Image (tube, rainbow, N blue to C red; front, side, top):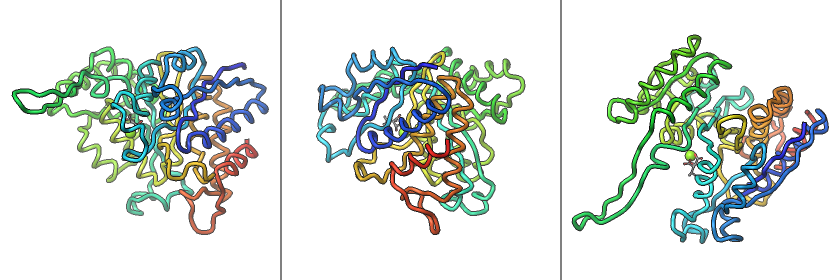
Length: 360
Ligand code: IPM
Ligand code: MG
């Protein structure tokens, strides 16, 4: 199959980890007879430096015209990088929000699972880690507080800031459908997380979600309040299969879910539009402190490439092969420094990429 992939190396460790993911995709092409063409675009700090804005219209158009997008990471350090002296709408992260909105990426999938080989890195009690867990956070990505009206103004001599949390039933329906479809391919369990004891947007959320659930009789739907969910994630993570939630709650809970895996360097993510199009990126950030040292863990980006193969290209066998290669490399005892433990073999970013390719 011939496919066009837009590649966004971005900032910090972005370029290094994306190089490894491309290596893996090229290996998949050789093995399975595909042809992937890559077009690079700038986004984030590097785009600010080159073009004055974190994402240009042309870059967005290039991404839109392709079959899928692979992203490394964007951003730098507040107080250190001059990008953060700019107004908020011109900072690196604004590029990320602009591409999400511009490409209609409303469904953010963030899996969090505990690898057997990495159980010792789990910060939870051994009795909980022993049980293992495998969940996916399905986060609404183009609505809510992130994209509602906001302003800061003086009202009666008092500085006042307003952010708006708005959802309409169509936005809730389409993300709920995604969550139920995904649950149908997993363990048939959706926990919808909201704050329905306080927020109107949450009450609409749970009403619409219950309505959508009727079309998926095999899937169980439960509601959970977001504060309780934060607690349950560290108390009994095994109970979760699919967590369905709005943008802001999903931002917070997905960080918590990734932390309990003990290895954020391992977690991929997908941001999907209507149809097959999607943007794929590691769950971690640009880690500028370790950039350029060839010590970053490329596995989250490589696993994001696997998600790209699966969700955008329907290449399930190819995705399985990449994921199996990652598990095999861990079994064989290779580790980057962030997941290193006693008795394992320490490797750098590019060596890790090579080891994965050898096993595909
Ligand atoms: C994420 C990040 C972004 C978000 C930031 C960088 C704007 O935290 O992808 O989770 O809040 O969505
Ligand atoms: Mg976040």
